[in-house]
View (cartoon, rainbow, N blue to C red):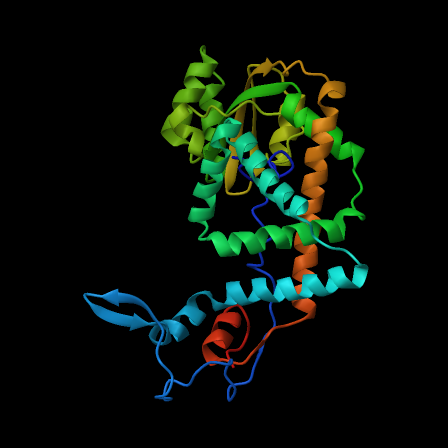
Length: 330
C-alpha cells in the first residue's frame, strides 16, 4: 500500500551513485577500435583467462560479448572518474584516505541501521549487498573514491530544511494510526462491501473477513491489517493519510480512489509515539536529512557530468552497449 517501501529520508542508503537511467548520448567511430591487438595479428599471443574441459579460453574470444553485456556500466563509471578528477583539480580539492574510509563506514552504518543489526554484522552485510549488485573489489575501491569526490563537490551547497527535519521526526517517532484496508478494482465493488459492513455487529472481524475474501492489496492475507501509519509519512498515498487524519476509531472511510483501485479503510485505534523527544533525536535526524540531501545532489551532479560530456565509442560492441537506451545504434 505504500508508495515506496521505506521513506528515503529514513534510510538514505547510498551504495554509490548509480548512472543507470541517465540519458547517455554516445557517438561511435566504427572504423576505429580501442587500442587493442587485432585478432588477425598472429604475432600477438592470446591472453588465456579460463579453461573449459582442459581447453583454454582467451580474453579475445569473449571481449566483444563482455563489452556488449557490461561495457556501458564500466565505461560510464570510468568516464565519471575522469570528469570528477578534472572538477576536483579545477576547484583545488583532493580526496584523502580518511574521506574514503568515511564512505565505507557510512555504507556500513546505514546498512546496520536499516537492517536493525549490530556493528559486528556490518562487514558481512556490506559484502552481501556488493555481491548481489555485482560489485567486486576493484569496482568497490573506485566507487568509494567516486563517492568521496562527489560528496566534496556538493557539500558546500547543502542546506538543511528544518521542516524536513520535523517531518522526519514525526514519521519516525510520532503517533500512528492502526488501520485495515480493502482495495477493490472498481468503486462499485467497494461500495457493495461497505453496504454489507454497515449492518455489522462485529466490525473488525467482518472487515477482516471481507478483506481476506475480496481485497487485492498485499495485506489481504492479514485481514487487511496495515503497519501503524504516521499521518505525515509520504510513503503512503496522500488520500489515505488525509482520510485517516479526520476519521475516528471504528469508522469506515471510503471508497477512496487510489492508484490501482478503490479502498475502504477501517480506523481501528490510535497508537502512541515512541516517547522520544524532538530535542533528543534532532541531531541524528539532521544528519540523516543532510545525507539524503547529499545523496540527491551527488546523483544530480553525476548525471549532469555524464550528460554534458558524452562518451565517444570507438568500438562497435561498446557502442551497442552505450546506445541501448538511446534512439540509434551506430
